[in-house]
Image (cartoon, rainbow, N blue to C red):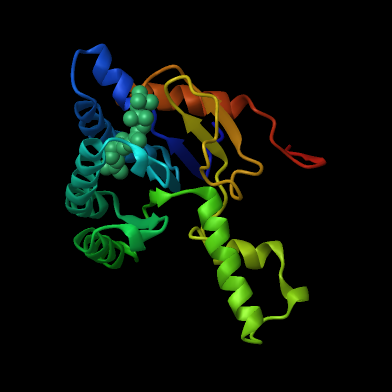
Length: 235
Ligand code: FPP
């Protein structure tokens, strides 16, 4: 079977999943985080090389404070759990998004995790936190504009490759497959630049119920797609 090199996932539906069980939304996020562990391991076993997940968007700050605090607590703890998962799966971890808005202790844990795992080559996990595609492009444009203003870069040297290299995902190949759970058919400001040619897969299953079998279904659907990059159709 044709295995995508890079899979991106919008982890949606934790809240609805919890509500359907008469539980608070945060319970859904906790189960969602546990499920991520299962899917990382399976992705690694299947041979997926890059996995990027949307954990907290630039828009998620507008949720009730209680929920934002609970998500931050979960992410804070996850940075510790993730060290173990990383060494087991020889996984390198990178956090994408504007980290400067996160609490300092979370930033420190992220740095430790990224440093400790940077040489692992098993699977590469990108966690999007305080991430928005437009915000990422804006930050990238600011960096490029500064280089031009400082005389380090000429306007005519600005290429697609140069822009890609200024994004948070620099050096990471673009996703081949985007999965979004829980029946929402949108991109929601995720990897706007990088998803240009990705295949899209939507499922009704909420993220906490997205099992290894659901991942296989998504990969089977991907396998049947004929990929097109502009005019060229993949053999
Ligand atoms: C969307 O569900 C999910 C989120 C906003 C957060 C995703 C976070 C996790 C899966 C857990 C933490 C992540 C890591 C990396 C440890 P929703 O709340 O929008 O659900 P709803 O659409 O049903 O309300």
